[in-house]
Image (cartoon, rainbow, N blue to C red):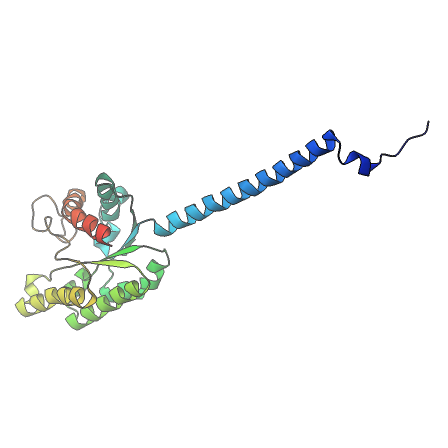
Length: 234
């Protein structure tokens, strides 16, 4: 039996061929549309991730959660409080027990590598306990705040008070160091991180230095509205 070859030139204009071309064109258009849609979705995800609020708490044992369960530490309780106030900000625990302001300054690049959008600086308590020069505290805080701002991070500064046994002159200079840095760097200042907990019965651990879980809760209750307002302004 002889097989006749198809004349494609004659078949191109047939209804069947026209239908095939239309289906192929529609298929190509659909693939392009899905590719474009996928690109738009990916771009939106990247933009959302870039703008997602991430608050790192650069601090010492008060931030790290010394003496309390992990879920009772300040960053965890703060994130929960911010959620209740309508914020979706993730709070990162960048606290290291025993850290001085110098230690925090040395860790700044490591903390910023986690790409926070905001930074709460909670340092200085160990400087005071060791009686370190106030000039060092001021210089270290300046370094931290200026370095974070240079990377586009919004900074908040939490102050600390020196123990009374170090004398009034040291105490006044210590307190003013935070005010000076906040003013020179134009960042918001929360005057005393332990406000509401220190010297209050049942809110501190036996060492009198670190808050217990209930004390952390009180600290968060007091500071979270200020942080929430700072996040909105930032």
